[in-house]
Amino acid sequence: TQALKGYPEFRSERLPSIGLPSVISPAFLSFMKRMWESVSRCREVYRRNRPGVILGMGGFTSMAPVIAGRMMGIPTLIHESNAIPGRANKKASRFVHHVLLGLEGCKKYFPNADTIVTGTPIRSTLGQAIPREEALAAFKLDPARKTILVMGGSQGATGINQLLFKSAPMLANADIQIIHLTGDRDDQLAAANYLRDNIPAYVASFHHRMAEAYSAADLAVSRAGAASISELSAFGIPSILIPYPYATDNHQEENAKIFAEANAALLVKESETGSEIFTRLLLGLLEDDHRRMQMSEAARAVAPLDAAQNVANVMERIAK
Image 1 (spheres, rainbow, N blue to C red):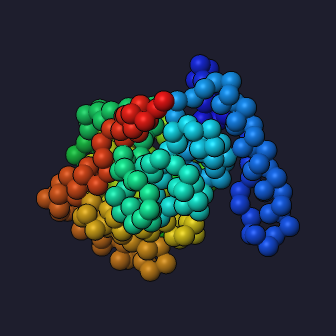
Image 2: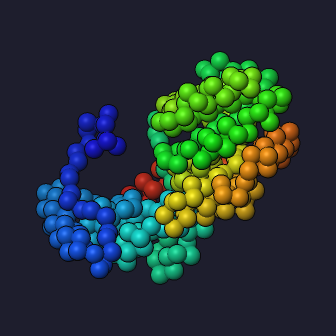
Image 3: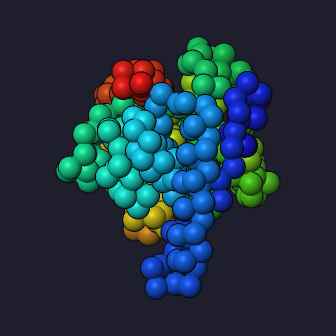
């Protein structure tokens, strides 16, 4: 329901599905019971509404709609955003007509499925790139300075924040400025650090007009979640990707590897990189305009453009 806020024209249905526990856990029986209840509920909804196609976007909440669709002969799809698929999508791939992928490198995990690389849809509210000077004006920053965008994603921002705090004294004499989106903690500490080291910065927990942040950035320092890398690709931003080390199946590192192998990003492991090494990499990239231009072009090429339209085209093609 959170995703549908602001879209009153769309109806929603609640399902009793839960995440998959261990098969030897007492909770597994409850999982199976709720899964069957969800499948039955989906079949009731489908009988009333007669959908032409079913799209699952991952997670075990999407298993029941896909299974129910297959049982009723409705064309079914799943979408996998990451380089390594989640357990639910691996299992659901047996029941669907096509597996849609955000990244080409994920194909090898679905050897028996009909895969289509569509890219990962980005937020429609994100908007288009705007002129750099206009974007920087929104943050009250100087267009003559190189701008670093730092963001940790929806989780795991603390490691990146700490790395920037330790690196700040070594950045004090560089002709740079920083847009740092800290997540729901560390914003006051970050602001104090940059003020202490006389580094011009815009610091906030979040920024809702991300087209401004992306348009202002000469370089991004980011986690490597599917949403973040898809947006970096769409805006053609060279980046230093620091994967969240506790992501399921280490999928963020695999996402980052695809960007690094395409020369769209540098992959930096949080556990292996200290502030001195990180600062050298950061400043080296900022000083090399030609390399950043190459990385920008590579970033745009990693993921397909118009991913939402690509997904919609497949759905329309196979819909009954």
